[in-house]
Image 1 (spheres, rainbow, N blue to C red):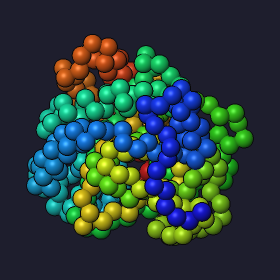
Image 2: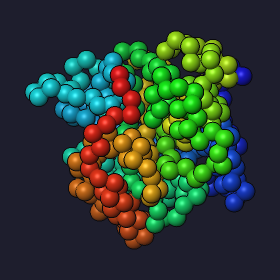
Image 3: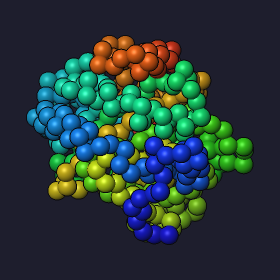
Length: 313
């Protein structure tokens, strides 16, 4: 099934049956692609905000960036050094109190359009949701590729270790978190192997080169501006980023209460615990604000430091 997927028939604003299709697609394929989550006006508002943020980051004036050529956290910056000196491929902490346009990003992260899909995928209520991560993937300063990986299982894990972590052979439980890419420009950066979130690697996959192409089942996911893609972070995937193609893809995660130490490690490794209590939620109102405050409190309950990193490199 080598090739490209362009759209799905799923809609975030569809019927109850369609909502069920979202979860069925995620469980079956490891991802679900929802076209046109954002209106043209919302896209433009977010593009305006992200353009300024990206310019600030490329100028070395925002310390929390994904630096080339490092793929996985942390991305440490030496005191006094220019964070963007070697180029960047991402901007971290869109909800940080010091982030330009933080309120625009906060309103997007906590929006009903996103939260209602997350609740369906996690099969949970407002009172179980946990605030997690909100970052941005941007056009790299140099062509850049991520290696094949699962976000929270080391590549060298044995078949038995993978099956244990993935729950292979067990009744499928509710997911502990949802992860998404929300494209503000057309984006063809993500390469996945559908169904690989529910099984150990094949021998061919295990022996593949870090950037090998043409693996059985491999597809490139094409997102149009305004499309959102939710995916299981332990699907086999990699990224391929073109320095000549504009990119601003909002990369978020949201969880539900009761997650394991593994999940706490995967979230808190990014350093969000150091400032999450200071997030300004004043742009939100009513039940939306109340829900967001509860989500933050549940993250704080996970602790502020884990001391471990899920992946290295």
